[in-house]
Amino acid sequence: MIRAGPSGLAACSDRGDRIIADSSIAAIFPTPTLLPLGDSALLVRFGTTLTDVANRAAIVLAAMLDNAPIPGVVEIMPNLVSVLLRYDPLLASPSVIQGELRLRLFGLAGAGREPRRWTIPVVFDGPDLAETAEALCMSTEAFITAHNAAPLRVLATGFAPGFVYCGLHNGLILPRRTVVRPSVPAGSVLFAAGQTAITATEMPTGWHVIGRTAFSNFDPAGHPPTLIGSGDLIAFEIAR
Image (cartoon, helix red, strand yellow):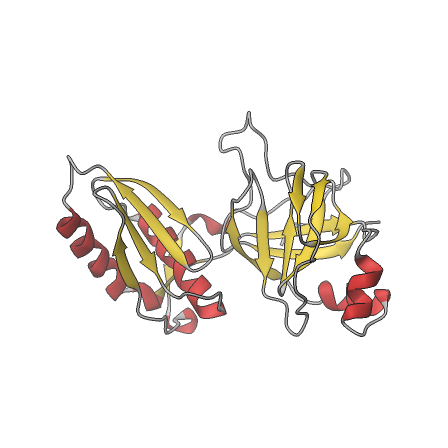
């Protein structure tokens, strides 16, 4: 793991650039449902609710498709429990896309991407921190310790530019707020539904705001514009 530098910004190792297949990381994934969306898209859905195994399956499939593209597919968009494939119908028919996809799904259980690891310092001073800890019957200090106890997997990115979903917290489950904040700044660290999220732009949110970080996952001039990807591991620590 590469730790944050003097600037307080997270850094990472580059170990996530290859696909690995090994019996020690093999997992039994749920059988996916293939859902055609019009004549140029296909949704591969591993579940209808967020579970650890469904999320892992979506991440592994997206990485596999990036590494071994299906001819005619022009975009691969992983989500929490699904992967959307957009393809050019002039280059590949739906039956060909589904056939190629089934071949890759056959070997999915033994494949996985070795995760990149990040350490992100957080100033835990959010307006909802004390209320969040109290709702979980914990002191603020105990909540922060539990929150930072283990690295979290990046479940998905998106929703807003650079937005990162991390999870799943073991035993730290709290619904979203009943009132949406009209705006929180970039770098806000959010908590809800067993997940921690990081904003990269100013945005409204119904999540509990527990802190802030100097790390930014979005640079519109960057290539690519985001740094963290699905399947990466994030260790949160108290900013010093």
